Image 1: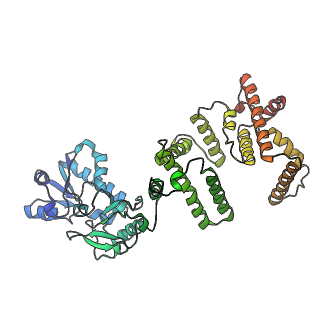
Image 2: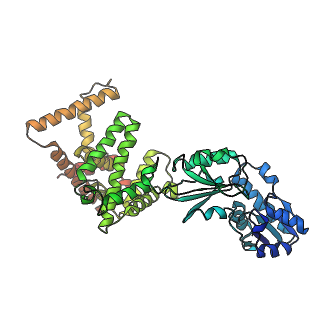
Image 3: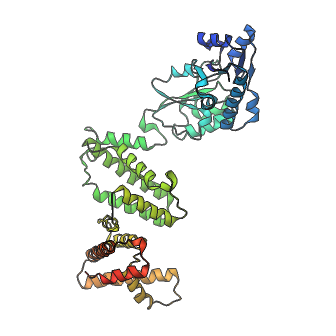
Length: 463
């Protein structure tokens, strides 16, 4: 294999650097990514023979396939000796694919960026994106965004729609086509140009006025929160604490649940926004006190999602919802250094409503095969009173009436049902702990014993 020299030649012949000219004169085999560039004219003028890969544009509709085919064609050409591979910009996907195939055998001579004239208009840092990457691209209005190689009207239309997710549709953008000077147009007209080719680029200036946006992202929310909590910000926001917001956070959570129960999706996204505002506000309060900031919050949840989903990001296997939940609890215990099942029960949030806490504790005990022994006994008693023909809806109504009756009984006996149920849950956990301790002392574990044996252990422990 000969040496492969990748040359960034720009679009016009004036873009060729001295290094590029010397490299082109030094090889016998020159391959252009496309002959629609100034370098092709220069080579013809100098009598230097060349070929191009333009036929690949017709052969492949997929950008990734096209880039791979181009890289493989250059490797094949290098079998006969040194090759100069000319691209408009060394950031072309085919170059990275080529390096992946040929490694150290590839030398890169960079040239001027194809969007160089637009960079001068950016007034600061700009995010550079190839138009072909529009599906993975998530623009942010606070950034200058420069899109290059918008070579078809269809691609320009996709780019326009993606940009309008962040920027106002009438926002002025700079469009540059070929060797023409950049012109200012409205974003919504981006795909209405007369011609598109690999030299077509667009610069979308950042929208700095946060009050003028049509859509906002998570970054904007945090920006607004910092402004509200600043010393000269909102008198209410800047005096809040984690404790003062506790009741409001709980109320917003219940309003989200109400929207879900009502099946009202318009109301749901609005209420989720209120809940998200609390996350951002708590993070800003913590940042001002040197505790943590919003990146710690997002980092914590991302790390948790990765470490708990080892069937996605690891080697574990989970075929259904139940297996996923068991795996989640297993990974959670490992993360927290928990060595007993009792620890998993005790960590269920005590501030949950008593009924929800009870259900979660009983569910975790059932996951290890203990099967809610007291609950099974009660179930047997009450189901003996239920007509066998009850549908799920009727059972829901019956159990609801039963709970209402228990609440009424608690009222008559002047017992707080929340406190009473929490005490019962605590006793259940204590009994569970005693069972686990006895099983462990006998050299066994929950997974080693059948349900009948676990039931005997449960019945032998009295608290």
